Length: 124
Image (cartoon, rainbow, N blue to C red; front, side, top):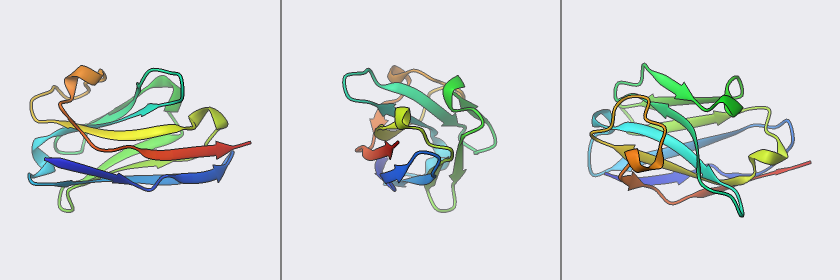
């Protein structure tokens, strides 16, 4: 599968953005999906993951209650709804997929397919 992420932009603190990741070349119902982010000078970090069927999700502690991952297998799309954004959320956000990883996988090496990043900038 190939992944294309979009939806980034610049918002003020407290605002919201919705990121989308569209898959092509294979059915995303076969893949565990995740979002990661990387801020300047920092390592890439896990944000959220969703199961193949879309019913099971898991989040990093720092986004619980603010971000929501969802999956629409009919549209081959995964979304990341981000609310109450903070300047610390500024980063390049990437979606990732893997056909064989377990549900809930939260490490980079669990995902073999990556989309290009989309920049999110939160101003104070």
